[in-house]
Image 1 (tube, rainbow, N blue to C red):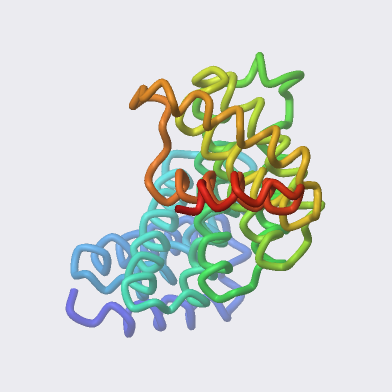
Image 2 (image 1 turned 180 degrees about the vertical axis):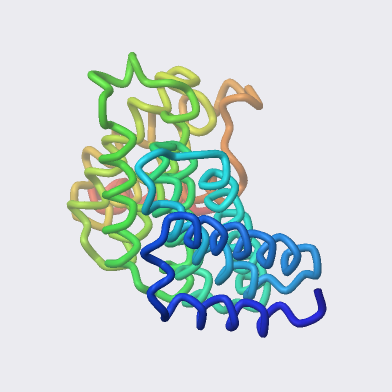
Length: 278
């Protein structure tokens, strides 16, 4: 119980002989690996537990039938990889966290658990953004979006948890494309976000307005001031009603005012722009 790594290494060395061709021997090996894994996890030796669970999972997968021990090995792998990912995240070691989250995703995907698998992909994408790897993040999010759309004919048929996760994916993709200066791709993401959010809270809700404001600001950057002004004014008219359910947070509200002023300035309405800036 105190020397888990030594026990694991001993079990691995025993696999080098011809005994692994014997079903009973392979079964005993998997059982022993699980015992080491469980004990190592209890002793908080997570890296050893991961290796032992992975060895057990590999052995048990060789059988055609998925038994209870296979499920235990898979759950152990998922749990311990998550623990290691959280530890790496706590020290901002995002590369290592990505590695562990990617393995969790593979296992969940293998078990056909679409929503938890896509949740891992969103976390992986967050870490790529932290590393300023925007292209990699966008690729991961695109894969998650495709997975969330799989088997769904329209957003009307989409479950709430799936739709919420899809909104997160598009929001993050918009950020990635923005920071990569891929304006058209970013705009496309906002066009996908708005109907999804409208389906959840209706047009004019707080989250809908936030997406509308960011789309308008992007349009200003792309030189489409007329459409930007038309879009942001939809929010500002609602904001005049002073309904707390409609008004976005301070930063987004200031962005809306700034965007509106920029459109007036570009179209020659200098006095109006100055009034808004003030």
